[in-house]
Image (tube, rainbow, N blue to C red):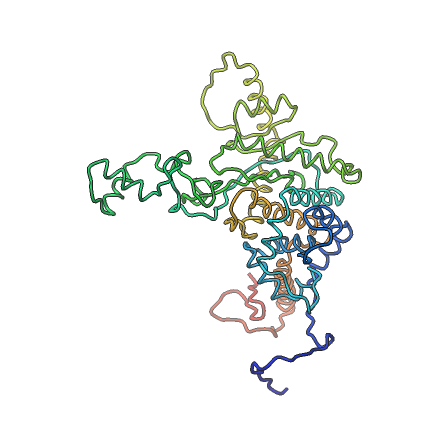
Length: 461
């Protein structure tokens, strides 16, 4: 075999035949995903709902809506947080070009084109695309809708704490501290004086007093890792039988769980109502839609339990330890709390609470950790929610792909190949040890008590 040499960069050719262009192998996951989308008429649906945002004939042709939504789905499946990163990834992959329907001679969308399409399409269009995915899930048997689990997490905002200003005067934090120092008698305060003065203040990070001028929707809150940051609150309503996310809402980070629950339940009911309007998907849902909710102790309150009892929804909400309570003139509250306590102590209640931590945290992990949406690159709730809806829709499509294809993410195939190699080597090692035959793949390392295969780093123990 002759040694090849890297060609030096020279002048590009003026004309190329199409048949001489390199063609990469199509990705099996994206090929199957395109088959599912085409079978259910995804392209025609999104083009129909986005038609009202475009001029009928005038103007330069823009990014097709079907390509735009596929680009945001790539952000979830490839774990890319920014639109600029999505544009770079698509330009670098022949398989993703095929998924988007782009020829080798077509230019890939720029990040500014993706951003402009997002600004052009209203939030309602993204909401309808999310509902369409839920309808497909119901047709495929991956949505039931009887029991929903509710939980929330924080998303780091694209805004810095050092940029906050006073709501009343517009002063930044440093100017505000200097004013306090001068009021206390320090004419020329140093950095040490300001730090000492700041440590003694109480409630110095109140959202009632401070806001970020670049993103007023971002609120000062404590993150999961203990840091204080400007953030948003994302809340999921998850089907407890299948793990599908029925509804997602984006709310202020300082809003309590008992307050944000109402908006999420209202959104979940609206989504399930839209799914039931389709005859085929409506038949696949449970006969009791939104009959039960499961939540942690942060959602436990008299008002929440009474409101759910009045609407006929059974609650399985963990009860915090509050000690002995006074139920004078609170008959309805007492009945609702005791009924919830009786349900969570039963076998079904314990099982649902265990599954709540499993299924809801799994959706958070896929969407915000491996999906890279823990930190947002957009500002404003409506703007962020557009990206978030399609991101969570990608998670739901991954559940359906796992049912019909066996794989929920394209990167899972890499792990499967390594796992298959380890399985083959494990079988080979077991046969060789049973027949007392020498290994061919790799030597036995004397310093290690277990046998070792150098081909796949598999240890017999």
